[in-house]
Length: 309
Ligand SMILES: C[S@@+](CC[C@H](N)C(=O)[O-])C[C@H]1O[C@@H](n2cnc3c(N)ncnc32)[C@H](O)[C@@H]1O
Image 1 (tube, helix red, strand yellow):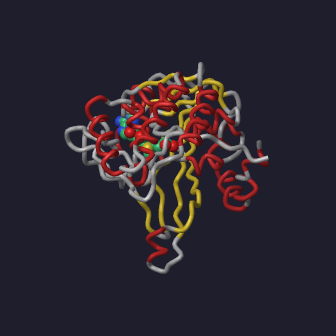
Image 2 (image 1 turned 60 degrees about the vertical axis):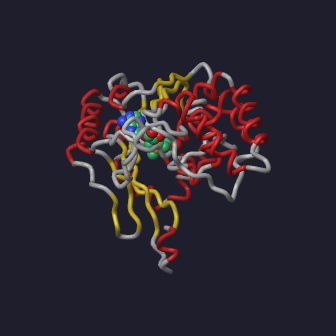
Image 3 (image 1 turned 90 degrees about the vertical axis):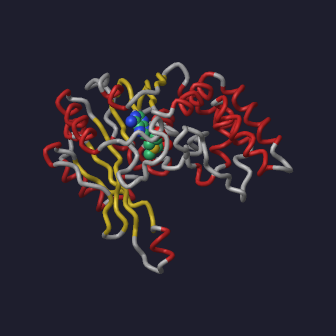
């Protein structure tokens, strides 16, 4: 039976569709699954639904987003009701209403306003200007997720994460410093190719060399990790490759045909890169080459998530 995984926060870059490819690499008995770049926390939600971890630590530099997470997990009925009020009020004058909610959010950082903005804005994409104001435009073709569906997802996620989740809003390096060998760290930093203009509080550039040093520290402390980082379309790769000295295993997950290639009448596929730490591969008791070969040869079988759970 296919399990429906709730996903209340619409978020550009969500790993919702990739969760089924990533979760099979989780070791057994994870003390805490740590997501230092949580965003909409797609991997933690899927892990909780499939009982791959008992405790969770969600962190994101965007403090308004973490305040929204706090509401979703601890006051699900209230935030669902507030979203419904905003969603209903927009009827008949959605364009002007969006601007009013955006102004209100920029004044108060109210979590319900952020949820409404994410549900309504172009590509569910968080954009702030240099003053730290949310400045993304609305997608005028849609009114945002229906309040009933939103409520169902909020309640379901609250049930999955309540009383087991730590929420923080600090730089990822601070979170990594607390990780232990019993935990699993899943990292999904902003990709190297992503434009980093805007308010540094929300788009603090994740420097490649610093990230590599942080991965090295995790290796030395024996903390297992999985990193999603860049990828390629056809033959064109994005971002620098990771230093060999880190000893990570590199997997590529086929995510579909690129929109750009389709427009140009080509059939280029897009692949997302996933890196597994050396000690994680040791825990899985399978050689990296075998994992990768298995991935290539038996993609459908290995990643038929329902069949595995
Ligand atoms: C690609 S998104 C993560 C998406 C997430 N995996 C999901 O499923 O929704 C990257 C996130 O990293 C956050 N971020 C950027 N710089 C950060 C930093 N220095 N420390 C912590 N979080 C950061 C951003 O706010 C953004 O939400």
